[in-house]
Image (cartoon, rainbow, N blue to C red; front, side, top):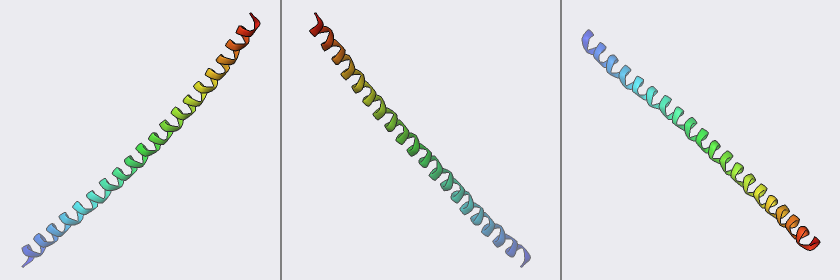
Amino acid sequence: MCCGVLKAAGGLGAIVALILVVVALLKQLILLVGFLLTMLKVAIVVVFVTVLVMIVLAILRDRSRRKRETEF
């Protein structure tokens, strides 16, 4: 009788431990996905700002080129 109870408790403990490990891994996976999504958002913002700066520089370069053309 005693051995059966210990086996049942050991099996139940293994199942509980497995569930806790799965929960911990899912928590880490959720954190990783959140981190990756944040990095993606930051990258999108950086690319957007870079494109805007390039557009402004192109406009300023074109204006200075037109000024030089009208002076000559």
